[in-house]
Image (cartoon, rainbow, N blue to C red; front, side, top):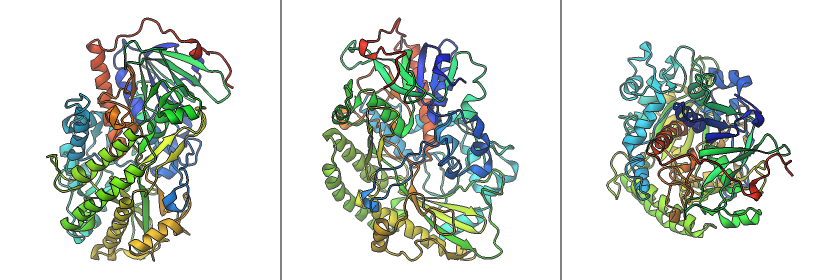
Length: 638
């Protein structure tokens, strides 16, 4: 690893922008070929001095790195439907990115939503590149399940052991304490309208109750994340792989004119260690791969001249390629927490006291599960469909972006959330709500989040300076149906807490919202009573309302005319050798842990890049000629 651009090679085959979850996975796979040279450029630190916070089991929640020097310190724009409040939007600025500070849970998406992605990809000539079989195979390539003998009698562990068959770098397992909650969780779920056990969560049928495995190493109980798994074992051994930290890519350079229409070529990148430091230029002979995340990737495209024309021109940026969808279509969900004290004498596992423990008891709920009947679910879809037409058409966005919202919103309602898809997609419906149980000494907390939000936000640069934070607006609850469904999920969790099973353990609800009941009361609480950013419940570390940590879709994989940014091969529309590979490309928010999905698409992308090189589609340029406007290597930044 190096921390100065002066030490980096001036010319490489592949530049990977961002050393996060996807970036390190791609770099590892590309550098498997010793004939190519790969450079990763990461804005954050290596994380070497924070390995205790990152890897030890008592630091397995988002709080471990949040507000530290390894946090980007982002916050949302004022949220109209939360009475103008701004919420912290934690993303981690270190090698490994979000995988260095997520909640460790490993959960894959359902078969039906994977096949919906494949349907969108086929429109762009993707054939079966995004089918369930392909993405499932890619996810298997990224992980290894480590069985633990003591857990063999566990239903959850048995299902995982028989289904997760890969031999990849990320380690998965079930620490004993994680499975101790089975005797509580599954019987309680059965009492709430017979919520079933998830039948085969690793083979596409995820709806139901599950104790999920977590990304830790068996034996050491240390976090297994992108840096430790994909990078550390090869970084000092491979002379064709360099990792440059504490360096921000300030823009991507392009040839002056496309060699042929629609084939703008990226020549390389400009980078710097700080706003006022000298800029360095590094050439990419083959490709530039942007893996800077759901916020960083659209920001880099926009400052480089790729994005919505009004946004770029207002900030004085020359338009290289107009793509209205860059930074738009943002999807994320709020997390609402309900907290309960347990009865005196009840002992619970705790992330702070049990090695390798993580809270992974999940209820993955379909629309019918949350609303209790087929009729109620279909009524919801009918109402949401009518509201969507008005909501998306009145959204203050470009016409193609409106089309993207209408298209993906329709897919969500009529092909994914419904029990019976209109296009013949197979498998269970997509999860609508996720309820997670968290234990900590004498407290049990239920967190509720949407898995298919209909609200659409955006990320746009605030200025032409890449060191200025962009404006992040998730537009939480701006689609009225999101509020309705989130409240239904909260009431479902309350019903769960009042089952006979939980009554044996729970004393009383101590949430700030314990007296809030019914949709009108909750709607008023969101508008008037919801706490500010990361304001905890009095006398407790629990935050009752926060950002959902599942943001996606700001560079959506859709046709250009539908407001899309990348094609089925991850290439930016109109560019011949520029790809985006991270959560920003997912056009539909996944019902999965985002890390699991991102590892999978990184494996897919690396395979596509290898295939292109083998068949001669990615021949290196002999020499890169930078135009005068781009040739400022060595100049001081203004």
